[in-house]
Image 1 (tube, rainbow, N blue to C red):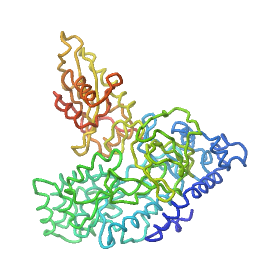
Image 2: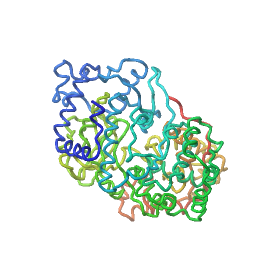
Image 3: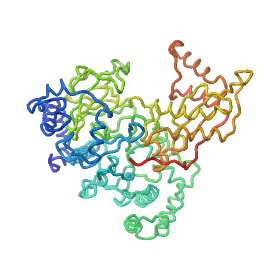
Image 4: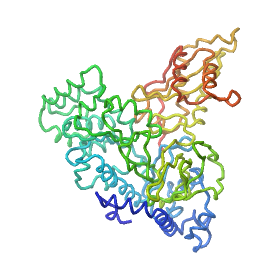
Length: 603
């Protein structure tokens, strides 16, 4: 695909959206033919579609190629990572592996990526401003304070870069060599975004945003959680930032040479007046509405606020005093970029994404109808191929799991996202993101499923055995009232030797702290990375509750209509009433260390 042809601006971009969505079926069929033609000699396709004629046949593809999860494609990815040829799965050279937020056997999932993928991602990015400009004019008259960060890279045994999809984009020529665009004029110099030290990067980016505070027209980060971490950093460090502004000298804390060089231009001269303005604002007792005070011309906040990020919406509304719209622009993953929000000013709870038929070949696995979310198919289960529905044949109101085929070598791959179709834009479906399959609890980019959580608790509760103690029941809750947020586990503990079952054993606090550590050690790579490297997840907490708490919890749910015969303790609490009950029963809380001794393994 020619990158130049993908750089749509203004009316051209909007016309392209119209064209793609009007001809959604034709675009999808053409794209699948391109994928099969380009990848016709791959080992994977020929395993299921023998014969050159059959390999490019769409009917044969749908009849023969199975629906898969990561475990089925992983052996091929691993062989390529170890040095075998990309032709195992794709006709183009694989240039990098993208580490997703999902995991397999505790390690990050690696998704193959080819050079053309960057052009497709850039195509979607180039649609965003033309869409927003329809609703928020004159954004070319100021700057965007977007806080972007890279993550540390790894390498496969064969030398392929292994990194996040966003790190890949920020380090690509598409980002670093972009031409000046008044609609995407960032306050952060590129060198600060590309700094591997997240604290130095955060300091410099916030500093640049404060220096340009009167020019900033929009605020944002990729995820809502990242923006809240930035606010927390500002709350702790605004005095240091003001000192830098007042003196015109960058703090000695910043040692990255590229950051020091670019920030010398931002801090061109001392500005004590600006420092005093910021000091007056940040010294207030309450930080409600702080974002509007520091950046008074800001028109909206851009961040992902759907799915697990929805839990941060109340906090963001607090910091902007509800005056700034929360804009969620696009739907994407490491495997593929899927669609855009054509009504960016809609409330976070009403966000829907229009799927773009030129991004990948999309199929849909039915999960339910009319609001009943029936998880009919398990991860390892063989999916009857005839169950899949094409893009243009999904039904409004139904729930589906998204299945994608890409140029980079994923064929009928289950993304793991549960979507509800809420309408159509021309002939392209519009979907609401419901959840990730099998995810129980999440704070940031980590996604902890019930199996991992149960394994961690099972290991930790063994530490209670020497004390003749028993873990009766447990549940969890993602506490985002603190920044960073952290996991809270509510444990009901009984001593097996007590005369009365209503008596709980008082165990030394160090034992419960060891239990916190034991749980975390069993959680996956992405969680451990968020805890130790990114600092985006705080220390895990165990709240010990009074005996009988989980009986009271069951009574609460039954009083609200749950069946006593089918009741199971939820492994993650979402009900405000249930959470209030649990919090009222906590007798003591224990935490894992702020800086744990373990560290994420490098793949």
